[in-house]
Amino acid sequence: MKRISIFSVKGGTGKTTTAVNLAAALAQNGKRVLLIDLDPEHGATLALGIRTERTLLDLLSGQAGFDQVCLKVWDFDFIPSGPGLMVWKEDVTTLKERITRRYDYILADHGPGVSPVSVSGLAFANTVLIPTPGDYLPGLAIERVFDVVKGVNKVNPGLRVGGIVLSQFDSRRSFSFQVETTLRDEYGDLLFDTKIPVSVDLVTASYQAKPVIFHRSGSPASEAFKQLAREIEGRF
Image 1: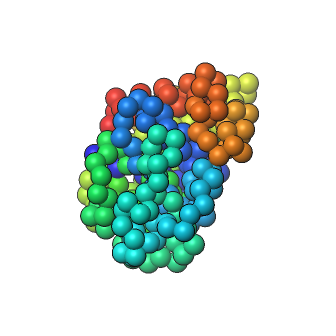
Image 2: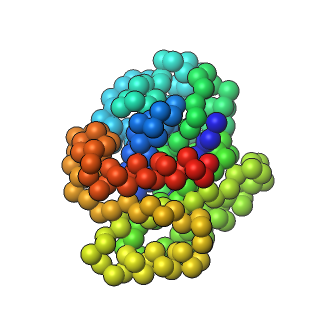
Image 3: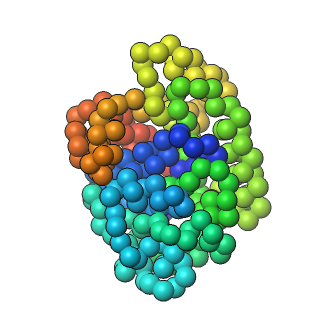
């Protein structure tokens, strides 16, 4: 079972977009997928249009069981975030004990920055995926993720950065290609070949509260997430 934290210390990098659409693409490939919203601002929960009384906090606190909290959404399972996660101080690694179904992939969507919830979520994971936009040079933000992972290794020695994916890539701008070249030179094969394009389809799908492959399956954005899913399967 691969547990992948989609994490960056910076906001606006495409974490939630990556989490939701990658979960859908992996599920379309026949994988058993669970997506957990570890974002105190409920990014994935809002992106999927979920409104429910039972949330991750109920599972963590023991007030509800896994089957009471877990929802089936667009071919994958989903645990929504809810009010109170911002101030949650307890260890979320107990999720390992509370997940009662078998999965090929468990994805965790994190909020920006470093918080007790994000650190605990990283302690639950075995791999970190870093989305980074193609519209600025993100060196310091990425290095900060490596620093956080190194700190978490004290309690989770197996955690590693598994890859960097370029999001919001604009092929009309030479600067996006400059960012790609810089990241390739710095991080080599850690940078996925897949680039998630700037796309009105991603915006429209978000407004419709659905993954882009269910909005417009053959769009460049849909194809990019399908390719990313194949790369993930080949790498992890």
